[in-house]
Amino acid sequence: MNKLKVGAQLIIWGRRPEENLESVLIEVKDAGYEGVETSPELILKYGSKAKELLAKNNLKLVALHTGIGELNKVEQALKLLKEFEGEYLTFSGPGGKGAEEDYLKCADFLDSVGKIAKGYDVKVCYHNHGHEIANDQKGIKLIIQNTNPELVKLCVDTYWVKFGGSDPLSFIKDNKDRVAYLHLKDGSEEDMKNKRFSELGRGSIDFPSILSFATQLNMKWVVVEQDWTSRSPFKSMLESREYLRKIGY
Image (cartoon, rainbow, N blue to C red; front, side):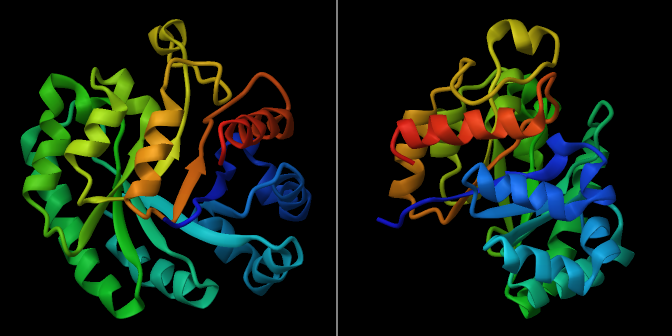
């Protein structure tokens, strides 16, 4: 079995990456992460300097995360991923109430991007939120059933699966052939009532079981994502990384 690599989503640092990427990447490295996930816009802003800073801190660009419907930005993002040897181009979905028509348009878009991405050796992934999981997983099922499994994979967000009413481990097992990587995100039952997030190990998600199964799938990467924190981003991300080490990852 492969050893899981652990990346950090930069969202928790807010606007700091745009203002001073170097200081953020130093914190990512010092917290013990091996890679980062961020937006195409951030990498474009820094250009070759981003590549230099990642290399300086021994970090890899794991994924670029963007929104559905911006086909004009897709080729640009894929070129960046190829240049930076990134793994995944990840999309968040239609949002709103998630009408069936929206999901079907989303599925068409993802298939179109998947065809283009084959030429770049990049995996296209769909990242779930709670509304795709609600109502007996109606939204995510529409995405899965209407996309080509060879072209479109899943980035499973553990918090939003549970928030939407499903068990994250069961969801990953049910869709194991489609899951490319995970967003590890935690929250207690009380957090979920208020859309709050917590450091890994403080909430209600069963990460030991989830990560044990992820290693059985020979998954390459998992990414810690905490959307916001009332503490310093470094302290929150360090605590999450230390928790993962404590349980063997």
